[in-house]
Image 1: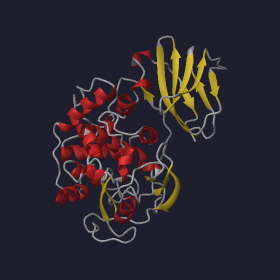
Image 2: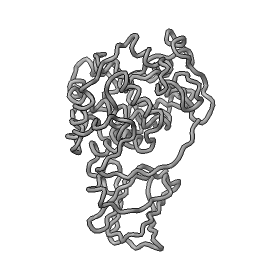
Image 3: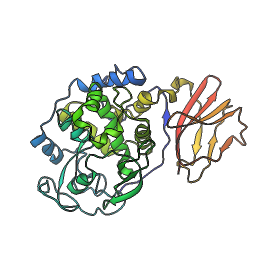
Image 4: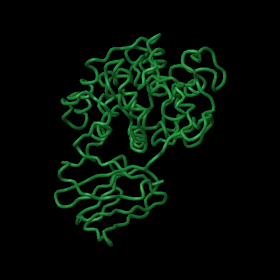
Length: 372
């Protein structure tokens, strides 16, 4: 169980490091867009020491290291395996796993044993290393739910035909442009999974086209998430879902611990945990503000908004208000808005995640908000 607080993300090109990356680790990450992604790939590939599949990953999960984010120090705090498919953040877990003794093994039901879940299925990269043993996307999970997920893409489920005991769903896709079957994790782990995918797209940037075109992977269902390129990597529909998950579920203590722990064992880091703003800088650079010193100070509330209305408060004179969806399409534009007691109201917003931009002279700031 944990406390959940609302948040506002200010997106600009002055980046703040969240986890404990070594000094100067990201000094060469100076660009934006896909050039930045290539710079990050160089950084996180340099000292990547591939773990063994057995016993390497098993040992990683079972270590007693204080920052081992694969064990539960954050919810029940009982040091059992932290499984994204069984953890209930605000309730009692339906079952727990003791390290080592509960490794799979055979299973027929939830709670039988835990195995190794490849968030990007092994079939997509033909079970090759270092992808197969990369701890940033290979996590311990319930064997049964892992099997129910199979090689399916992650996405939003419109209609579920299977639901695990913690609420993980499998069913008809609600992802734009894809009508197949997807798996949707619980909200608590959506950002974690999204940042794992962004890591994979960056660390293996130069291989993403090969993975996609390999004829042996034509039947791999997760392929639907990718577009075959080495730059954008994802289809627009799935990219927008991952980005929304990244925004709505920010980096927490577990991810920070996991990043530092894997760095100590594998030798590299997930830059999107260290610096969540890199996601916007790589895939949505048009949403970046030009200079941190040229920001408009304002608040947007409530966030998330339970209805279709948000309020903007600021003491500055605003020349332009623009609202974009996650595809970068303009949703609303208000020139020379008239504020009432320093508050401006925007109505008639559909459910979704948006980027709000306020411009005052040469200053501009963007913030994310969600309408439920």
